Structures are given as structure tokens and as C-alpha cells.
Image (cartoon, rainbow, N blue to C red):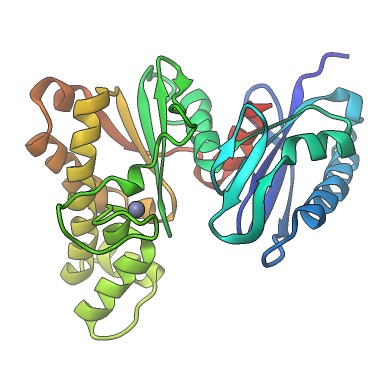
Length: 302
Ligand SMILES: [Zn+2]
């Protein structure tokens, strides 16, 4: 039988999503479980083995029908060797050879990459970036992540750390970032900092959902907060546009739900700051695949 389906695993710091994905990028069957707090490598591997067995039974498939398993993980990896370097939000993972450990347990071929690269591949192949040869994909959430496609393939950089758009500085001076950098864009527009700013403006704590609803119903203070996110991000992206001359910038992640409230000022700043040809060519759009991008992209790694 032809091996046409793959398993995609989107490993998040709070949830693990597993899907059986076909060649057209459709999720045929899925499972979702909590990621135990600070899960240990051995514990995670055992849970994955059990859940993959379950999902295969659920889909009526045998191991022999699976072409491979891909995993997108929330942290830096050596994708060639299949090693997790560390996870910023899960303690106790340092240089874990996740690929070879899982291959031994599953007796299936396993591939590994970070989750933003996986999402970028999914949007490029099946989502908003289908027409693009060169693109940059962003996720806006707690952190600001980025993936880069150049000439149709992921650009990884010399030590596989490329794409850290969240840590592009936008000022000479400014707040210190978790990465040790100064005035990184993430330090201004990561969820926590947006909500801190919102608390000052509204004089009380507010959730992202509430902020989003207020902005969409025409509240000017709330809309102003999103406009500020778009403006700051636009400044950082103008540099990216000049440097890489991409066809497209795809904006995804939870905060991107604000849609045009962020994208309009973002496009305006790119026009204002970037060089004429690059600025005219680049399209800035929202991601299409939503939270499924993680599973679909992980399956593309396999
Ligand atoms: Zn930083």
C-alpha cells in the first residue's frame, strides 16, 4: 500500500495536538491532550507513544501505512540531528535527542523542527502563502516568532537560529528582553506587555479577548492599543522587507485575530519606512490555517 498519510504533532507548552494528515494537508483524525507542567522527556515520549497508538486505532490505520512522524516543538532545535536544544517554557530539557528516542520507541521515521518553522511551511504549502516564493511568517502571542521561506525552502541560518523576528531591536535604548537583548520588538508587543500597557490606559486589568471585543466595537482606546502594536511591528518589518524583499508577510498567532486593526497601521509603516520597490511588492496578510497550522506543518516535516 502507498504510504500517503503522515502524523503531525504540535507540541505546545500547555497542549499536545496530534493529527493524521493526508497529502492534501487535510487532518483526517486528531487528538489533543494537556502537556503536564514541566513534563520530563521520558514522560512525554511515553505519552506520545500511547497517543499515537490510539490515534492510529481511531483512524483504522496500521503503522506500516504511515510515511513518517513530524514534530513541531516550542523551542530551538537542531533539525538535522533531531535534537531539542532547550524549551524556554518547559524546564529540564537540554540537548534531548528526541528524534532518535522516539524512532526507537515508535519504529517509525521521525522529523523535528521548531513550531514556527512548521507553521511557516504549512502556510506556504496549503495556506495564505501558496503563491509566494519568498515569505516571512509571524506568530503574535506571548512571544513573537518568525519563520522565513527563501526560494521555496525554510531559511535556517548558520546555527539554525534564523527567524527570530521577535528579537529584532526597534530602538537604541529601551527595556531589557528575556533574550538579553535591548528594546526587542517582543518586549513591546508580546501579550504581557500589551496587557500591561492596556492596564495603564484603562486603569484596570483587562483580558486580550475583552480588549479585542472593545476595539472591534469601536472603542478608541482599545483600537489605539492595536494600532500601536501594528505601528511598532511595521517599523521592525520595514527592515525585514528591505533586507529580504519577500513576496509576502503572513501574520498569525492569537493576537492576529485583531486583523485589520493591526494590519492597516502595519502596512502604513512599511510603506513609510521601507524602500519603494520592496514596499510596493510585499503583501501583508493574515494566516489562513489558524491553530491547525501546527499539526499540518509538523506533518510536512515528515
Ligand atoms: Zn529579545
